[in-house]
Length: 220
Length: 220
Image (tube, rainbow over all chains, first blue to last red; front, side, top):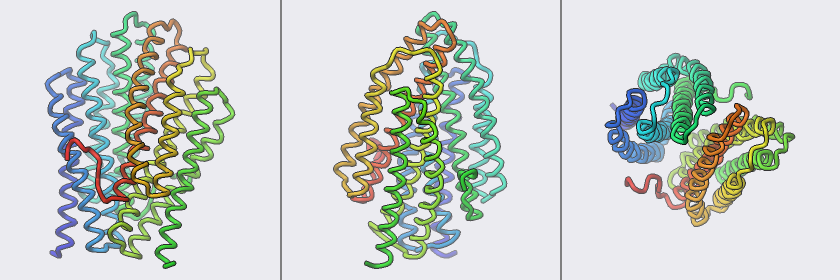
């Protein structure tokens, strides 16, 4: 195996490790939210530190790979896609932190009527994240394409959740209920954003595999 | 001037043009919000189409510049930073669209007590955006650093705004007031995110100029 191929394989493995950490963060944050388990906080914040370090290490590795090997074509697309995916993964970690922090507050407030669509959103988004990582690992553009389709479902669940929360707000007679409802609203937004990042990553994979930029299809 | 230098200068100009379009979008969306002027919508959505096209053109140009010229050091950093800045600018455009759409709804609802801190947030964020574009144009890392400091002020204004909106919600006796309050809450979040993107761009400029990655300072 050429030295360059070894380095490219190392880049892929590092990104997969980082994706694994981010998946752990999302799992811990959403379990805490759905199961109201307050012990999950420390896992999320300690994983975030590791993800932040890895983001910088991976970007540095990408720059060195380009500078020292002058890749073109599919190799260059792989490296620049890796830089984008790296950035999306780190931002997914930030959303997991935000969900985890708001879940801690939610546990403290009066019990809000459980919103059944939030666990549904969580389930779809976690499956999108799993699939886009798998698609990156196996360069599977078909699987990446299937992730894009799921994002619409997340968006329509989010609309339902926001409507339910608005009705909760209207009936609220105490600030704790409003606090809880606002937290839930931002949690729904964060879950939706996890889906958006999985969508971005899937678009990057399709570009990486086929060299075709499918962002903004209605414009181009 | 070498052909490569001409191309690099063209890349910089294209990114500045794109930044100009995004600045227009932010200006139109926030004017509509603050001045309640409904005629601004078309400007924002037509500019968005242009920004989306430019994002793809600029990324493609960056890849070609790397593949054909095999740049290293500061030139390579400039190109990869341009790719990141390009992505942040496009996402800023998305936030401007979101602000503009919610402002259209806000105009329809009953008049909400004007929240004086929202125009303040807008003013700071627009100045951050202007400064980070200027810093990119003149490779001014000091100016980029000054943008980072302003982000804390945006975050604390956002907290005040969210608290004021929660109090509005608590007093609401009709769903239109709740709808308006929720729209305002997401608008405040979008304005905050504009500041986050200006922060990301400023970090990229500092990396571009000094080769030093200052993201996540507490971790590294």
